[in-house]
Length: 123
Length: 378
Image 1 (cartoon, rainbow over the protein chains, first blue to last red):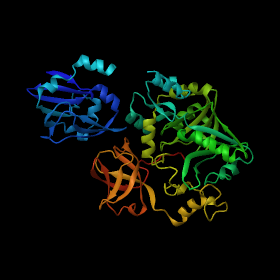
Image 2: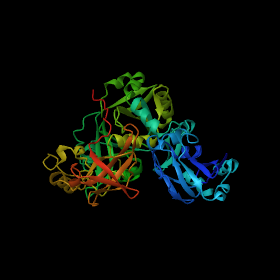
Image 3: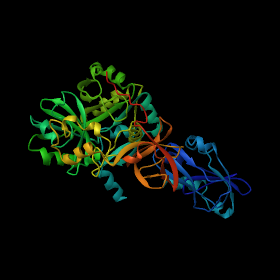
Image 4: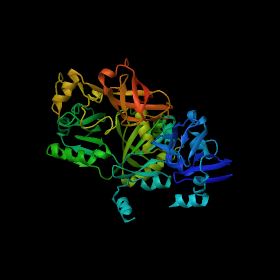
């Protein structure tokens, strides 16, 4: 189980062979403020690294969840449809967004580790 | 780095700046001021706290100006479509500065404070222009005195009356849109029973030197929390209150912004002091002949917020309007919208949609406000 981080303030956890879970970091949820609406992608959507895959609306504004890796959406956290606040209150566990079947493991390997991410947000 | 530091120095701060920092506020630039947008509680909880208990808002960035002199009332009447001459002592009234086209330069609160004086509170973003407008148009008829050294606090929420009565028992006599000089913790304050949250509450003007002491005194009550500008906006949106730059602008008359209620009978075409303010012909014609567009509330289906600037279309994809304020209502638990739409599309018989991310979301015309207002009328 390896956790990596993107410059878009997402955490990406390699759970099984070639499958990653994606959510937003504590830093991201603090910046976004209270979340009120999340639009999830469809299961089996093919996504490329950098694609906008979810809409995240806070009390303040709309932003996007960016695909940190390329692959196929194999699962989405349906609870976020009715309880978007989960992504604010528990972003690292209950508030996960999607699971992606990686198409290129090197994209995952190139993401930041925890130490690099900490340094990134302190800049 | 040099540039960023210069920007910080150029920004104004209010008398409460250090208290906001100490309270952990997230500060943002707003109308030239460094203002608290939210506190650690967060916008949603701050909003709900104000609906349930009492919120304290720093609104010192707003402009406070006195008009002094025996002609002050008459002079102000030449700038607004509102009855000022018969505004009773210690009563407050909502007014609008109009331009020659009948558009709105700003909206304001006017209080008759006695001794031939009026106290005006104007929007932060418009205040320099408003001060110049007053000086240029009526500066010869009365003294225009900007209160540079005064702070303004809004105490809003269902328990605001209780909180203030504990500190100043004489505030119990105040009803909605009235004013009183109060002594709070030994501090001279000028309070009006009004605000912009839809709740009962007060706006309290105080000299900068005593401002922090007053805020600390109010915050000492367990029901009172600092509330930021983020929640101030969602509270006024739920209360269906217009915001300058959104529902009000120089291009639309007060009638086109559904503010006919604010235009005094005596200043309308059949009134005894009809007209006599900038753009009066246009505004009176709009009242008498009706207008092609109006401000309405819209309730979107589902949870997706519909933001400012989103186009409203009918079943045949004709654009019939635009969102002026859109967001999420923490009290209603749903997205809420105020929009300017064609009058013909506003009667609720037509199906309307908001275009959000290229999708048509159904919206329904609803009566404003979204949340029942809770003013204290005695």
